[in-house]
Length: 147
Image (tube, rainbow, N blue to C red; front, side, top):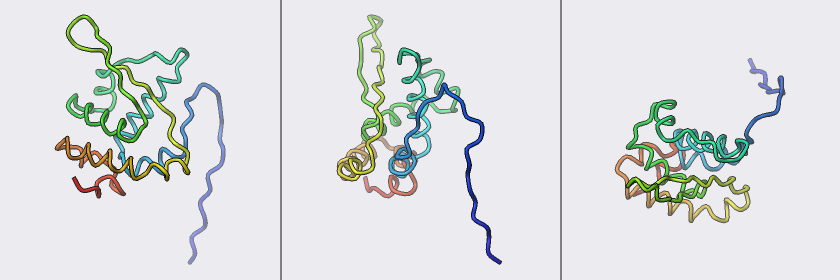
């Protein structure tokens, strides 16, 4: 017995959304994994807010997605290694710097393939630096990178 093909059609649509490029799941996710992908999409959503500055902070991320504070620096490093974000540090005057996330669009397929080896090297370096990075990386490709 042959199973029928499954199709997905457009349902009700609306405006007021953040664009999610196909490359996020097709190319980046196999390297960066579930949590980094979710974190990136959350950052992207706030980048695309009216002024691009609305950000509830790291506390809201840890609560919303049940992440530990110790996981966030690893996720930051994974996203930076993949080129999806750049972190900037601004003095707050209270001893702890503010982190500013510069959230980039993903590379298109051709540019990703051109840069894939460098992305792999960068992610491998993150895996070497953080003991728990291996468990956060993508199962398809990221976890297979040797530290």
